[in-house]
Picture 1: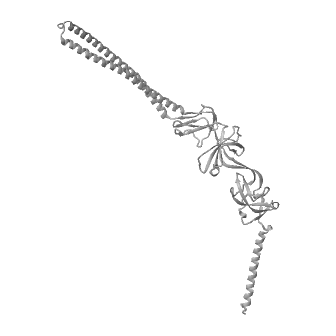
Picture 2: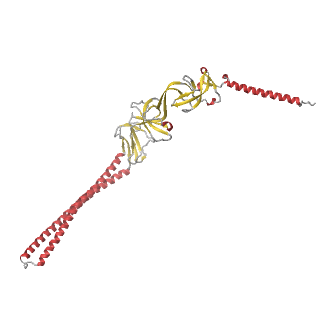
Picture 3: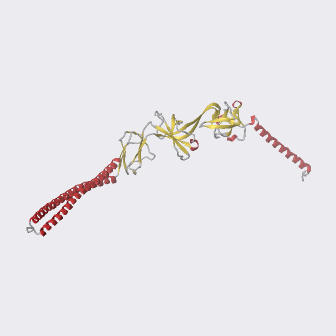
Length: 425
């Protein structure tokens, strides 16, 4: 049997009324929920153990600039290889106390030994050549002296003969012929010229002999220096400590049997107890640092007071390196190459309102924070204008008063709320 369904206008009107009532109910519920969120009792709840808060104070603000750094010795001496060689034996390891002259390493190089032998051989040959040269020059001198003496004797004999012939010719032309007189005079003139030449040869021989001996002696001196240099190279392969101190480790440790090049670092000696801190400050903050400012060096276990003594004029990797002088009496935790944190005191602000530095916001900016109200049950959003900032503190210029408790941790998850409920466990 067929059922007749009502599809007329009345049925459709009743359906529209039900849909209208449903929509009205949903809208009312949404408005109620939104209003509930705006009410104090409808604020989101967060655990107080999960937030970091601080109390606004009035007083002195010490502005500081922080940067990582390293403790380095004020006095350090590198030990480098003067010549290439193979490490045969390492006698002292890093951390060992050494005195000036202590043997710390032995090297070897057969080529250097061969160069010394060759230099010594050349020096011996130069000494032999000097002896031979002196003998040869002495023989030449004696021979030239004998020749000069013979020519002088002939010249004197010829002069006597000419004088006699000239005297006889003047007394009686018949005793001596005119030709004999002229011949004797010409012989005297020839021998006089020859004697002058031989005497000049003797002077030249005497003068140049000393120069030749001097040149050979200079050659011997140079060869002796070469021998000494080779001996020093061999001696340098017995590596000793140049000063007293403590051996410090290298970035790449050396091993026995390893070949090292000339100029390569073998070790380094540091003077214990005299350290300084090299702190790397961001270049945007380094402009506030000046020589003479105080600094606090944190070694993770101790805090050391120091003073800025040098500012590097160059910027490296976005940071400026400053040197901080440390007192002579350092705690046991202070060691070379120790990583530290440095806080440089750049300014002292008196009679200001300040608080802990929040996780967001920079100096001279306006930010919003949550201030704890109603005895710690709620926190409401306030607008705060910041002033000068330090490492852990920041100046408050507007928005807060001394004694206010503010939340400094990240509250970005509650950006859609102006009020949150605080729950204590």
